[in-house]
Length: 120
Image (cartoon, rainbow, N blue to C red; front, side, top):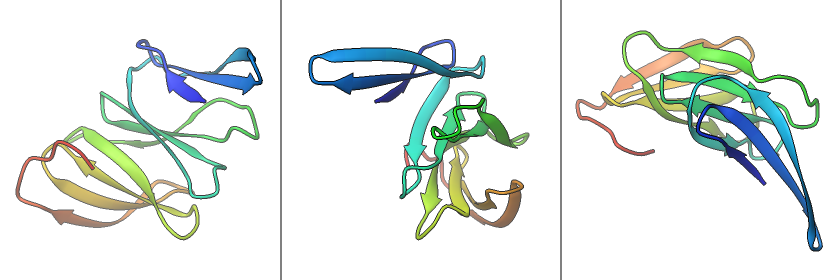
C-alpha cells in the first residue's frame, strides 16, 4: 500500500496478516497530488501540486526521479498509456493534454481541450 504524507514523502505499508511495516520510499519535498501505477506495477508516477511528475520503481528501491516539470501550467494528473510502460498522458488544469515518452521526458504530442479540467 503506497501513499504520500502531506510534505511529499512517499510511504509504503507492507501488510501481512495482522502485522504491518512502514517504509519511507522517497522524499520529494513537494506535496503529491496523485499516484498511479503502471499496468505491470513496476513504475509509480507521482504528480505534485506544483506540476512536477516523478517516477519511482519500487523493485529498485531508489529515489524518485524527476521526469517532467511544467512551466506554463501545473499538471493535474498523469497516467500510463497502455499497453506497456513507455508512454504516459498528462493533463494540465488549463486543459492541455500531453503524451510523454517516459525514458527521457520528451513531449510527443499535445491537444488543447479549450476548457479547465478538474480530474483525469
